[in-house]
Length: 309
Image 1 (tube, rainbow, N blue to C red):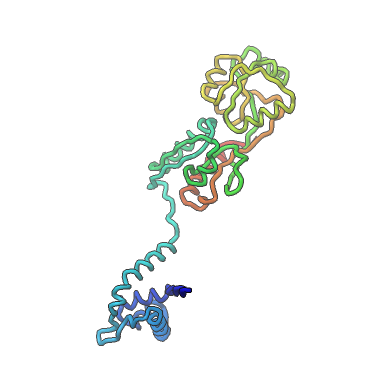
Image 2 (image 1 turned 90 degrees about the vertical axis):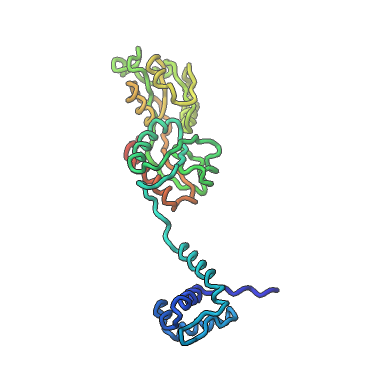
């Protein structure tokens, strides 16, 4: 069996580099912070391992042998590589950074979170671009491989290998036309479960939270007459503003739409489990400076901007 190769100690490589530069054992010892006898012992060990005198003492100093002339470029390359490995990771500097972040989020977050996030990023990191991507079956793989930097939403299926941070809590509300003929301040006292079931509704299938709504309706044997099914929130405000339909949706998106379109907010007349919106990232990127900056921005903006139910 072939004998394993003895690897050179890094201090011996540094000695060879110093001797080649200074041509002096004394000056090399001073540069390395060692005594001259110690450096002489290291040189003897280095000569034995490499099978060559390496340096010859002359009136002009310690002159390298041809073997040393051949080795020095490789030795300095190795030392340079080790030095680069030991250096701390470069920090992420928002004002000068040029980077694109891909964030997976629901279409509700496009309305509630993305505008504020974009505004902040443009102000503090003008060279940073954002890309909003869908939350789908490939989410875990995208976060693991770095195809996506972050996922924001209610994502209870993300488990091993992922970090998470709660941004805000969500409960449920109802939205209606501000001039609804049966729902409003004049009829507010009559807004209850019976009134809810008597009205016609818009069903929205967007977002993982809607599984909680459907399950709550089924478990409480509550039926509702859904006249329109929407895959997301696009067009919801316009439809509510021009009809007498009711929409049941999470508070953050509901109140955002209500403010923008002048809709009225009604309490949800039945119990629906609340949930938390979190940001998620893969363990591979937990210490990555750019990822840490993005997560910090989201925490700063959204942990303060949305109150828990």
